[in-house]
Image (cartoon, rainbow, N blue to C red; front, side, top):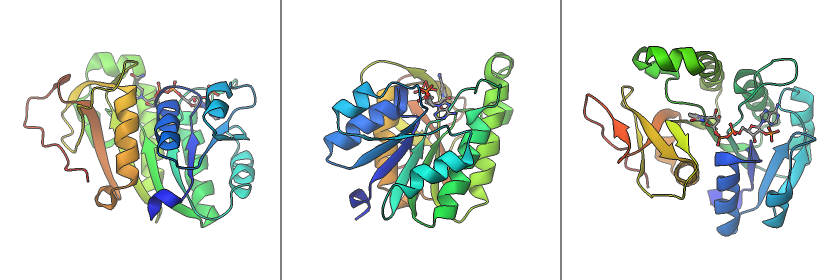
Amino acid sequence: MPDRRPLLIFGASRGVGLELARLERAAGRSVAAMLRPHSDDGHLREIGVEILRGDALSRREIEEALASLSGPFDIVSTLSGRGEDGRLADDEGNINVIEAVEGSGRAGRLVLITSMGCGDMAPYRSDRAIAAFGAVVDAKTRAEDRLRETDLDWTILRPGGLVSEPSTGNGLLTQNPEVHGLIHRADVALLAARTLRDPATSRQAFAVVDRNRMTCTTQVDPFPLA
Ligand SMILES: NC(=O)c1ccc[n+]([C@@H]2O[C@H](COP(=O)([O-])OP(=O)(O)OC[C@H]3O[C@@H](n4cnc5c(N)ncnc54)[C@H](OP(=O)(O)O)[C@@H]3O)[C@@H](O)[C@H]2O)c1
């Protein structure tokens, strides 16, 4: 029963990670979140999330956070952003998470949220997208590549442009690398929660987009999530 495992979220202070914490707590699941020392934990505490403090740019701090959890756990990472010295959580932070979680020997499912444009989607990026966030997307691809080298039970979700509006319920997963478009953060969270529970998504990468806000020159086949 995967839902009985607690869920550990990296990046739960806002956005998709916070929406996911809300969904999982509403479903009665135990949720822990690792937050940087100065990151606000008010919303998470209100809904009963266990707060672990640490910086994902420190492998040691992640290992300490993992040591405070008992038994096996599932993991979702939405990490993104630069540390004070310019290092990116998108590659270094996520790679620290992946390696620490693998080393713990207690990982259940792991869902890594990256971005449209990563991996095999790279050839379909526009010049504008490459100029605006190419470096961050490349950093996320390095994290994806590290994840693929592990024996972990992972799924990669690559959302399109994120919108902070209520869920539409129209989000989908697809393996068409040419798709572009937008998706609401709440829908990414919803799909991440379903992906965690669907073993058919294991060791695969998917673009995540709203069916009513996407463009694609070729046919988009939605993945039939359980
Ligand atoms: N914006 C878009 O249109 C877009 C498009 C495609 C994909 N994405 C990706 O989708 C994901 C979700 O995006 P979002 O906008 O909902 O969330 P977000 O605002 O990018 O949240 C990033 C999270 O990472 C945490 N974080 C950053 N560096 C950290 C570190 N060193 N240690 C611990 N935590 C750290 C932040 O916590 P703090 O409170 O400590 O800062 C925050 O909770 C991200 O990976 C984003 O890059 C975004």
